[in-house]
Image 1 (cartoon, rainbow, N blue to C red):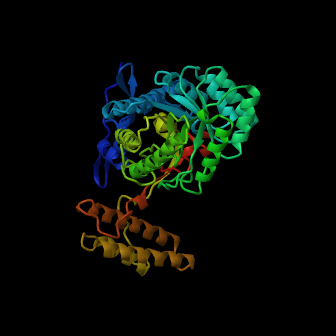
Image 2 (tube, rainbow, N blue to C red):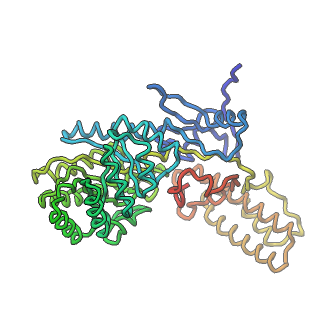
Length: 490
């Protein structure tokens, strides 16, 4: 028998608390991308695509099902449906933008394996990506082997980035013999001699790309890949040397891809447009030099709105996916068409934007430290310390106009009382009584501020300072969904 749906009703000092208020407080409908919400029972729900429709499931129901199977938390829950949905969304959105703008080429995405090397993730990427020609990016020999093991020769592209030694090059060239669409990106000047020697020894002409070091410097938390001081990429002088060396060996026709990377979380669409425009100037210049370019690889950078603010803060982005795709395409067209250069195949290496929503870490809360006062404000005895009495009087006169004054007095008296306790001049019970009174004062001020339209200056963060502390049972290094989430907004 199915249990009737329950509705959450929590009564606090500030009135009845509802699931709608929880959704607003945590901003779940802003950062949840339509996948996550809170239902009338107060449970977090996941809305996943399933067979052309959508199914909504409560996380608490999933947890209950795990318990019935004997599984204990912490548990890393991966939602393949959301992974599939993000791949489809990225490819479909680029497809619509290409059709709307009249772009004369196509889009092909690749997933950077380093973002998440879990077998289940890569297998799902390869399975779903086959429909769209969505490939993989490999930054090491091990990752190239992973790509070769999961992709079909006639499916998505394999973009080889990172440092390349002789074994790496041999493996990449042999994959071309097997029919894989493997493109080797030259990122340092020392790689070209290795490529030329391996090509001559194996008798295989490589498909090459070159990573340019753009001058553009972007905002964002992971922006070390941009600007003149970025680690990887060739300078203009090194690019000219590369062209001359390839022409000397009659291999300039092997240079087919231009690649750049500005950062893995670019919050400002203006920086994205600027990077594309600068890269297109390199693209035009290399075409004029005789390179057989046909691919433009924009690298990563497509952001995730972690905090739901839809701004250019480090943990958000001020653009939608539709705007991202359209701006990229329009910038390419407006830069290349006056130069009579054909539209290239667009490649992006979107990692976090593809997998960010598909992993959830579930863990138990062992304990909670709450900063709430006792239900009734304590009565101050006649023989209590004078400062404690003064603190109690502040509580009696908390009103809207005097809130700032009351907070100032409360902070002062509490500080003095704590100092007396450190000197051994006030009893433990008196300190406890004072701390309780102080919490009553702050919560009373918060209750007053709830009724005003605009929070006055000086009260920002007051409510957050009394937030509960939850103690969770998990290990950051063993249980974290993805390593790129370290030092991310939570």
